[in-house]
Length: 558
Image 1 (spheres, rainbow, N blue to C red):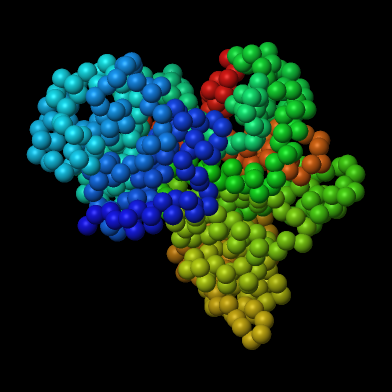
Image 2: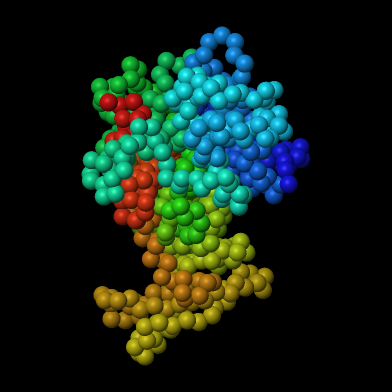
C-alpha cells in the first residue's frame, strides 16, 4: 500500500480538525517563528502521529519524502552562502532517512540511494550526491542544532510508526536525548538528578509554553515569555500576588523588560474561559506527546474526576453569585470551584483538563465536558469519582460510552438498613444488584458493594462504605487511586498566585496555570527517572520546587 491523494487529504483534514492542537506550529503561537527548530520538531511529531494511523501509510521512506517542509525557512540554519547544488530541505530529508536506518557513514546512504532511483526522484535528487558532498553538508553546512533536530525527527518518526504497527528499519531509542547529555550513571545522586532535570525541564518548556498566547500583536517591547516567566515566578512562593511578584521579578529576571503587575493581570483578563481551556489542552497535548515516547508512560486506563474549591470567599459577592458559589460540604461559606480530570493509577498523574464550576451546572454536564476532553487525548477505560457524582444519569452516561466506573454512594435509608444487617452478622463485605430510576420507566443497572472500613472510629452502620460500579468488585481496589487527585490538589494550590480580584477569568487562569505547572513537574519527574534508571516509580525523585526553579530559570529569571 502507499499514500494517495485521497489518503493524504484525509490525514491533513484530521490534523486541521484536531480539537486541541494546531498545525503548522509557527502559525499557532507567536513564540514559534518559521525558523524555529522547536516548531519544526513539533510539526513533525503532529504530522507523523496522524500519518501512520492511516491504513494506507505503512512506509517510513514515503513519509520522509512527503513530509511538508515548504513553510520552514532552513536558511537560518544553513552555514553556506552563495549558490549550492542541493537545497537544504532536500538534504534534511535524506539525513532524516539516514538517521532512521541508523547508518553511521554516508557511504551506506549513497549505496542505498543508488539502488533506488524512484526514491531519489521522490526526495528531489536529479543526481545522487557523492559521499564527500553528504559529509560536508552534514558536518560543515548544517548547524549543530539542525543536526540535533534531524536526530530528533528520525526518532519521533520511528516511534510514531512503531506505535501504529508499521515496520521500522531499526528499533528507536525510547530514552530522550538532550543537548549536552553525557550522564550515564546507573545510581544517580542528587546532583546528577538535578542536572538531568534541568536539561529535561528546558526541553519540556520549549514544547509546552508556546501553546499559550496573549494575542498581543506584533511589535511589543516585552517578550511574551516574560509573562509566562512572571506567572511561573508567582507560583514559586506561596500567596504571592502579581504586583509584589512583578516588583521582585524585575530584580531577579535576566530580561531587560518585564511586565508590571497590573499589565500582566489586564492581559490575562482579556482571555476568555474558552481561550484559557483551549490553550491549556494544547499545552497538555504537547506534554503527553513527549512523555508518550517512553515505554514507561501508560497512555490509557484510569482517570479521576473531582471538584476542588478555593479558600472561602469573605468579601462582597454581589454580581458574582453565579461564580462564587457554596462549598461542597454545604456550609454557609462561599468559594470559587474548579473541576478537573486527571490521570491516576499507573499513569503519570497529569491533569488533562480543568474547568470552572458555575451555579446551576449539573454534575452530568460537568462530567460529559471533562470526559470529552480526556477521551480526545488518551484512551479511557475506568472513571473514578467522589460521592457528589452519585447521580444515576451520570452513571448511565458512563455506561453508554462503554466506560467502567467506581463511585461511592451516599447512604440513604435502605443502605443504612443493609449496613446494620451486615453489622449484626459481622460481615465485612456484601454485593447486590440495584436498578436506579432514570425517569419515563427507564432504569440504570448497577452493583452496590458494601465494604467495612478497617479500624473505623464508629461502632454503628457508619463502619461501612457503599460503592456503585458496573465492572465488578475486582475494580474496587482501583478506587484507592483517587487519593492521588487530592494530593495533587494540594500541590496545585501551592503553585497558585494570590489574588483578591473577583474576575472569574483571572481566577480560573491562575488555577489552570497551576495545574499546568503541576503536570510539568510530574512529567519532568517521569522523564528524569526513565533517563537515569530506565524505570518509573510513582514517588517523585525530582521535587516540585526543583522543577519550578528550573522553569523560572528557563523563562528568563537568573
